[in-house]
Amino acid sequence: IELGADKIILGVGGSATNDGGIAAASALGYTLLNSTGDELRPVGSSMTQVTQIIKPDVQFPAIEVAVDVTNPFYGMTGAAHTYGPQKGATDTDIETLDLGLKNLATVIENDLGISIHGLPGAGAAGGLAGGMVAFAGAKMKSGISIVMDQVAFEHKLRNADLVITGEGKFDDTSMHGKVVGEVISRCNKWSKECIIVCGQSTTERNQTVFTLAEAAGSVDEAIRRPEVALRSLIRTHILPIVYQKMK
Image (cartoon, rainbow, N blue to C red):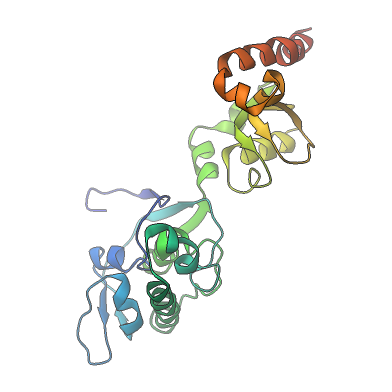
């Protein structure tokens, strides 16, 4: 902001924080007070004590928060319960953090007039995503969508005859925020044929899917000799499709 940026894309994946974004808010000039009017340290354990939020006189640029999950700010599928255990939080920590996130969301609504209760994706990065929406007027957007827009994917897609994408394991989660799912979605939008190449697949196939496991005869063999399996798959399955497109 100090350097004059008029747009910021904030990636929040892989965070080990669970503070509802109050540390970022503090860095942006916000002040958080407790019931006696004392300023709180902007850490996760302070969230239960927040009773007032004072906004700074700062003009924020356009901010997009890149998220790839839909977890809400708090609750059983919220930031603390979902990501706390992954980061070493104890059961007691999780309950405290979850109560803090719920309290913070209430104070945000009261003082800032913005509701992030139940907002899908607000729980990303320990609530940083929801916090940025509240504190900086940010908009949440699919991370892969942001990347694709930045590289003008659809412009390139319109001139393509065939798209090949893939990942290690193609399963039911592939269509929810992952690269391969977004590629497939945009190919469908423009009626472009899309081939998925992956290590293995456990989902019902409504796309053209080729796996190294099938090419190699087993998952173990595909892991042991992936290059051989990939070359075989290309030669027997993908090149014929490419040649057909070239006719």
